[in-house]
Image (cartoon, rainbow over all chains, first blue to last red; front, side):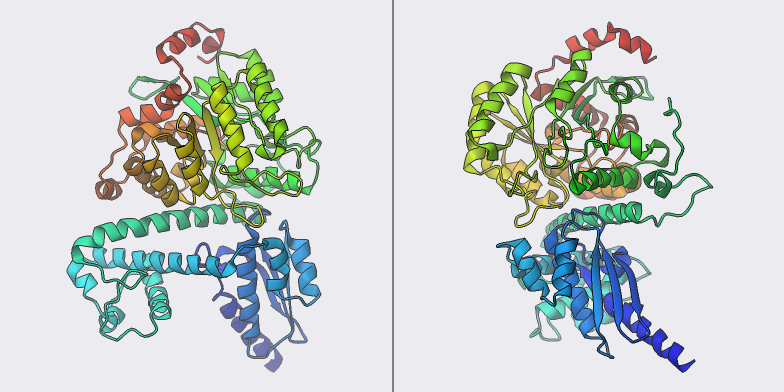
Length: 265
Length: 340
């Protein structure tokens, strides 16, 4: 029993840590996107992770950032286990898995694949996008609550922290925006406004609509990717439920559907 | 022709269609297999359930399927069929101009066949553009900047070799350059679907029309910015439009942005057949209204008049189609009877 509860709590810790790894392009946890196909604590305490992206063609740079995130998450596990991470069905799976088996760092493996791409700059781009997307969700939530633009833009952190939302996007993004804000502006004072631009500029009440329009552009792009990736992931990895006893997409993919004449209507 | 529920006939030009062979017999390697599987995932991920095809049909469909889905069951009047060779992935190419021209020969009044070339072929690319013009009299080309070519995994519209090709296109009157700028997949070092090269190319080649397929999504903001500045940049709706089914509110946000930035004259319908068939897309599009709050925020509406432009009139303008003459010609063709 004792062993079972230890492994159970380790399993929980493992998933919690993995849940902190975001798809950098979407700013959503890789666990929620379903990219972690399997994460298991073995009998000897070591950890096995199977990782799979929605398409064979997913950008290697993004794959790198996520796998690097996974590695860092595993490094933080309290029992410091050995671990194996395996990338499946990706155009560079072989190179990545071989490199990892040889004990190379992700940086070394991907330096070859990514040539001159500046991953530091890429990370920064994604940090900006995440900041903006989270901010937009909270701003919209506050507007929906009936707060005036002036009230919203006058908010400081203590006021922000007592705000409550119904379950939804604003509620989900509220703590995440807080984290992004403090990461971006570690030296901010408690009474500084909570909603500022990425550059740290205050937003005038008259400029909030234009600011929101800009943020929306960022969200539209991120949502496109998110929706597409989810759709592709589902289709590719056979997670769909059987609907009304009819063949599912999985059946089509697995070629289990008998040929029939095409619908004429 | 699409007849609306109110009984109005709408002229439809489908700006982005394919006649491919992605079958296992034609696949050269694992990349060819994965490429068609990725397309199939788009198909299954964004289509209504009743529109799904079996995989084997999706990999390779017949000329009859194509004709029926576009023009008999489907509402297209004219389809622009694009060429994408992918010779590093497919033995006979994925979707070559030869294959397209063969089917177009059977129904010349229905198809506009576009070519494709690869600037990385240097002198050979220039010769090939001459060949395309002389043999097929192409009015447009499809540029797939992420296509592999030996060691190269992508190119940019601004590459010097590409500029030589566009100069020749301009000279020969190949006016319509369709550029795939879509979701991020490959290649390695640079993002070949980044839209910024469009900006330079469009400025430097004012005589050419730059039709950006998939509106640059997921780089819609970059694309809108460029298309607003450049009068000769257009947005093709392929891949964006199917969201009308899976996530209609999201589609509303995308189309509102496009209308706000580009205006109704510069947006083109494209089904991306055979990833999606045009009938359900056109029906849903005609029935669609932008959600009120989004329309109010952006100050745009998707009126019937605008829908008509997007569905056909805008593309007709780019390809010099005389809409009234075409309608008459098609009305007297035997196939329109078969469609009843």
